[in-house]
Amino acid sequence: MSEDDGFRFSVQRGQPPPAPDEGQLLRRLEARGGSSGEMEVEPGRPNAHENLGLALLGQGKRAAAARAFIAAVRANASDPRAARHLEELVDAHRAEIEAEMPDIAEQLAACQQSVTMARVVNEALRKT
Image (cartoon, rainbow, N blue to C red; front, side, top):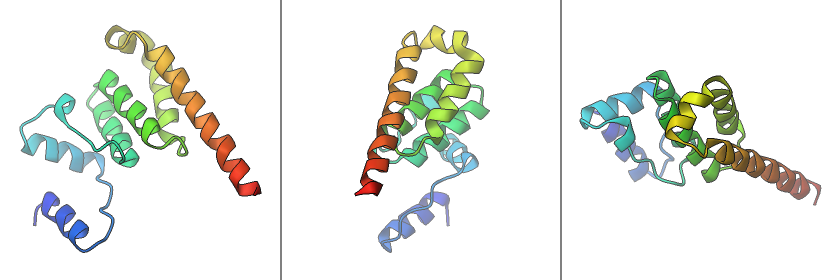
């Protein structure tokens, strides 16, 4: 059974599919003959975006990784891990990322603000 077959099997049985690890993402991408820039992840799958970002980072594709981390934050700002990955990536490689994404500082600030707002809202909900 291929990884994609396992994914379909989980979905058909009503179970949430497991989040693919970096190796699975890269193998699926290579099997389809695509490049990481062509890989599509559903917008509502924050862990898939985060894992894709980590896989791209492992390939040295820093700007593409930054885009994946941004998508993960947009999909779920309540989980700050992708924002932390993005912050660390931008801190370490700002000039390289800015060459492909001139607005990375604004996007990083927006992600940080989203995570902060989500934390405030979640704390307020816990108090009620």
